[in-house]
Image (cartoon, rainbow, N blue to C red; front, side, top):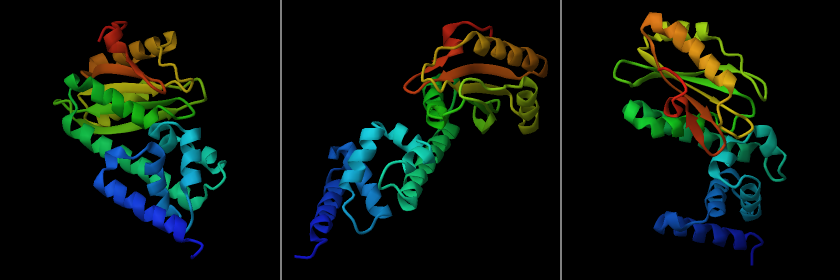
Length: 227
């Protein structure tokens, strides 16, 4: 019996299982299938299980910093490339879907998109969605990045960019690296400053979403601001 016959047979069976009933696969089995593409000749089941043990959800796994992934024995350049490629593809897909259907009534979609973009960033990141008069996304950009607990947010830069792209309205979002999406006093004050500057320009600030690891909070829904 060839030394590699065991894992080759396992690969064939797992691929067949996926093609017949993909929804029946366990999380580590889906990761294992991805690793097949990155590591063509090895038993990657132990590595797949190890990755899921370290990062229990796909969001945590795909958004994990490269430095953390490379700390795991068995993760090399090819595995890292595969994981990061899927991360970018999933974000691009969600971005394209959101751009087609975002409206004020689609707040849940917006919050899900913001979580996908910045929930697991190790530093605070300010994401701004610039919308046209039909509430479609013109462009979205990460405008600022800060330390582990603060982002230097400059309303003037946000409003300048709004005018450059012809936005009728904007949605602000930033993450809390601690994982707790509870808005701080500073978050509320900053949003007031952006609203104050946007009003004379006829640019509406539709919401400010604070993103945690597993949840997000809308300042509009909290009623703490005069939008």
